[in-house]
Length: 236
Image (cartoon, rainbow, N blue to C red; front, side):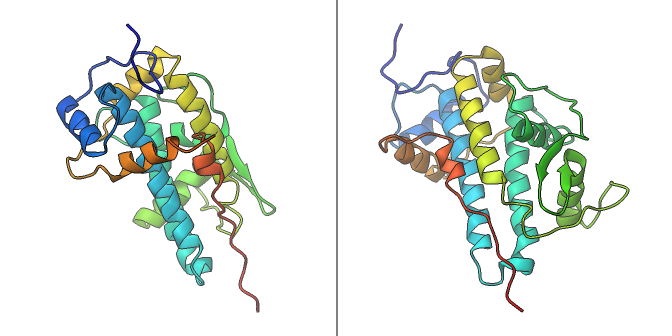
């Protein structure tokens, strides 16, 4: 039976944990009453990813963005990649080992149905004027920044062009992911099982996502690709 919704996932009726809370968040955000809990979860994830990426932009617009804010900005972005990876793998546990590599791999190569666990961690994700960054490089850099440790034989260097390509990569990946959710049941199943909490007082990501999609000619990709993460080196 058809529903009066602007989008419909490939399998919108899949069960999700805390379904009543997702419906409650939808009501708080004045969402379409016919959205299923899984569809609300999908919009919520988009909203959280957008919030994280906008936080990166806010850090990078500071006068002292380079070098003092750059590494914190990268850690925030890596959190977004981790969340995206969790939805792509369908990880329902607190285990985080596969989320980041799958997330970064999807940015480099957004396949219709990404691998649910193992990926080639030597895959190059971005190239700058200084060097190429593989999945392993980016994970080692995130681990060092977040925990003061890295597992890579040599920690990759950080410079002011590392984050430049990511808004476009994120925009492309999210376009593919959003389209996939509407056509591919496997992606819906992974999103349904992914460990993403529904918090009763956290409706703002939903409100912002609904507001954005109500704008004329809005696309999910432009929500990310419109960001500018280029930071110029301070003059001597």
